[in-house]
Image 1 (cartoon, rainbow, N blue to C red):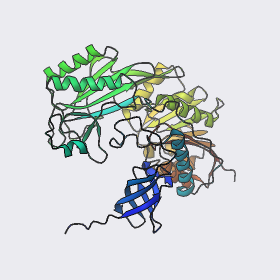
Image 2 (image 1 turned 135 degrees about the vertical axis):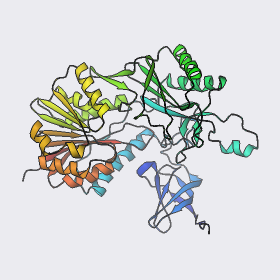
Image 3 (image 1 turned 90 degrees about the vertical axis):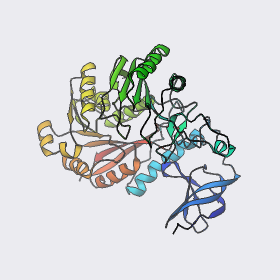
Image 4 (image 1 turned 45 degrees about the vertical axis):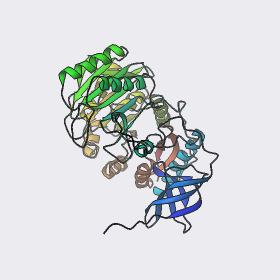
Length: 471
């Protein structure tokens, strides 16, 4: 038996807030929350529900009675279909307000934490064209618009190079212009697509697992260098060289031209061999005179300008005098560790990814920093009493974990070591709040500083300074 259609329509719903994952919030007549995807706080709308749960609804606005004064006109023609910049229709000052509010709400409601006055969120000077890395996917059966579907015409142009439609792993939206990465990103992407069509290079079909062109990654750096990596599914030497030679000739500014042959079911490259076709196999990023080597598999903050602001906040919160032993947990390629090293006695970085630690060591050598050591291993296993005994008890711990936050064993180890201060950098204030709740009996929160790394989206970074309580 099919599931009953339980869709409901609510009229004249005022959108009162912005919530998690970029959704906005209204209230149903019975008081239940409605999570909406296509509104801005201040709109008054009719809503059709798409999901009904015990405590809330999900829905879409079908009619607008009043448009919010917080609205602005999206600059991108793909807004509303592409899921990448969901807040483009909200003025930037309002985006910042709701990001700050989310951080404070998460820390108070999830962590039940006592907070000092939160510093005003650091906005991004660039609100578009701020990303240094973009990945685009090929498809031979692109996402069709409603107009195209309803036209009744035969659609011949089905190739796409762009982004996955949210929630649909096999449908790609063809992107004409993306406003997230500076030129020549758009020019490179469009030229690859055009050349591929003219020369009969087949586009990937994820359902049937066939086709030549799979993905393309473009990385740019503040030093003006450009990396392009094309991922192929089918291995056709002649056609591959045709495309790579054309790219090299058309864009001589590309300093690192790479490719990978990936015939797995997924397109992750971390277990694949990257082949350098021309130029170097890496580019360089620079910050305060420090150089960081970035290869195709490297993690680096995708907004270079705001990464600098984030790291300055981290260093300021640390208040180093030059005498401290610092542990940098989840160090990645050691960027924060090296950024604070000149103000510390010694910095020890720990990271689970071997390639990242290799990069960290190479970068430290290049930057002539000799007071940093890097170690590889799963944090909850490596960061243990014997490690502390061997390397010393830290005066300060900096931790910058992934979105899932810290493992409970890592939190317990920090509490056991009891450093005087902890600086917790987070890309997810909900899991940060959870971790901080475990620490609140032993540590007092002295400072909170949200940093906006991703304008036009709901994502926000947050830095918290903790000081050991005197008992």
